[in-house]
Image (cartoon, rainbow, N blue to C red; front, side, top):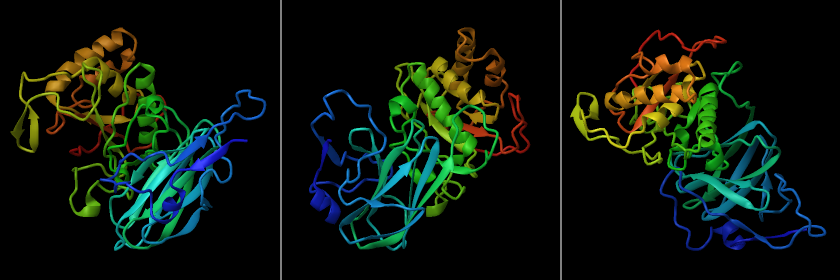
Length: 384
């Protein structure tokens, strides 16, 4: 049997590892907190990795129920263990007095050999939210909660929701779910390490389509893209919680902003033109488009169109001018269905709006799903 050694166990349980700096905000990466101490199992044969961690793999772990009272002393750390099954979206929500500061919540995943940090959040007052999903089988996760300022007393809620992957949603499609932390960005195809996690809540169908698009782009040999705002945890526009809304829309989980692909194969948040100030913000100056890859972005946006649920998306007109021929080439190559090609140029499913020189905004329908349809009617226009 393997022996597991914990890095900085004493300080982890009491005050955190020496030298660890406070997180700068949501999306800060976490360090691996447990290492593995050598030794093969049994007679030396390679054993299949298990998604379930041995008891005590993390020192001080406590079992978490559906609702768990959390008490952490000032400067201390608590760790709660959660077991999941395949196809189970698991949401972690920590509620505590808003006057308490310095609270960090992280999620750690057993990778078959050791616990590895997936993500952490330290922003906002009185609330921390993270979510996980593993389709491969049973999996052990831990929720690590730090109280870096004063003592913490709160409630950790664990909500389990069945989740089926795919490009079509037929049941419970409007349920608000947090976009799960990717287990491996190179497999899941999206990276939210720089996003604000409490603004990562979307309708079940939009979360499905995001994850499907990520897998498709990875299968096409592309790098992960970067989703940013969906909606707040309560379905309101991101920024409502701090009195500074970041959008005109993004309510009820129907909208998402996603980074774009450049001709260099990368997909960071960046402008693809020289911008000028206009009413409502900024837009590309005509003739200044640079690095924007119409072909790659047609594949990305086409992944959402394949759901039959997109009512509209927003992009700068200078980028649309490259997206349309890119979509035509992609359709000729068979990587975008020919039936979707008209959606790129109909002026509705991809339309100009200021402030979309560095990302695409995708919106899905809030009406009931109509099987077999490729488009959805737009009843009321809502600015992004």
